[in-house]
Length: 423
Image (cartoon, rainbow, N blue to C red; front, side, top):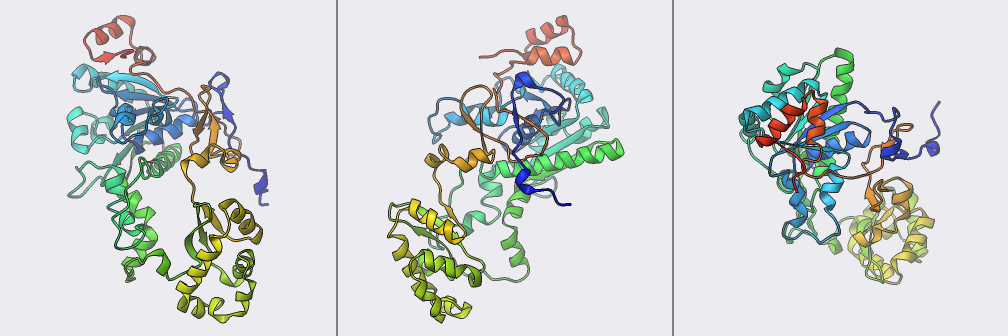
C-alpha cells in the first residue's frame, strides 16, 4: 500500500535542551577537518540529525570564519556563513604540524566513525592525515574525501572552488548566459558547494550502510568536478551522443516560446515552462486573455509553434506587461500553468511556502529564521539550527572525552599544540 503523501510533514525541529535518542545519528562521532564549503556542509547535515561533530581548526582558525569580511560580501548582523555551516559543531584548535598535535588527531581517529576533509591531497600527506595514513588506526572509520577535481589524474592536486571547478568547468557558466554574446554568468557564494555537500552526505550515509553489512569503513569520495558535470549532465550526455547545441539566442528569439522568462507590469519576472502544449495551451491562452489563439494552427501545432516562435513571444510580452506579478500568479495558478516566480532575496522573509515546507525554520538560539538542510525523514527529528562554536571553545572538553587527563590537557595548551577559547 502506498502511504498518503499528504501525511508527510517536515522533520520536527528539536531544541538542544530536548535532545534524546530520537535523533537518528545520536552517538555518531564525526571529525570535520575541512573548510570552504561543501565538505563541512556535509558534516552540518549529519549534525542536524544528531551526529557529534568535532570541528578541527588550525591555530589561526578556519578561514571560513572570515568569509563575511571578504571584499564584496554584504554587511550583516552576524557571521552568517559560519553560523550556517558550523552549527551544532564543537571547535577543537589543533596544530597538526606538531607531532603532539598529530598524536591527538590519531587518538580521536581511533574513536571516530567518520573523518571528513577537503584538504588538498599533498597537504594531507604532509600533515599525516591522508587516507592511507589514518585507515590503519580504525578499520571502521569512514574517510570522506572531498576534492576539487577528483582523487586521480593530472589535476587531482589542484585547488578549486565551486565557481571554478563546479560552475565554470562543467559548462554551466557558459550555457546559462542570456545569449551567446553575453559575458559568462558569475557564480554566487556556495551555489555549487551546498548541492555538492549533499552528494558528500549521501556518500557517507551509503558507507555507513555498507559498514552495517560488513563491519568495515573505507574511503568515500566526491568532487566539485563530478558534481558540476552531474548538474549539467543532460547537456553533457547529449553532447556525448552527438547533439550539437547552436549558439544561445536572445530570449526574444528563443526557439520555444512556451519555455521562457517574461516581464510583468511591475518589473518583476516569471519563468514559464510548458512541456505538454496539447493539455496546457488552453489554460495558458485563457489566462492571457487570448483564447482565440486556440483556433489558430500557427499557435497550437508543433510545426506552427516552431515557425511562429518569435511572434508568439512578442504577443506574450505584450500580455504579461499588462498586469503585475501578483495578478499573474493567481491567474496562472488557476489555469494550471507551470511557472515560477523569479525571486529575489527580499521575497524570502514572507515566503509562506518555504516555512510550511520546512525550508526555513526558526533557529534554536532565538536569532530568527535559518535555512534548513534539505533532507527530511518522516519520524526522525532534526536539531533546530543553533549556535556555531567560537574558536577553540570546546578544545578542553573534546580532549577530556578522548581520555586526556587535566595535566596532559594543560601541557598541550601551554605548548600551543591545542588552543582554547581564542578570541
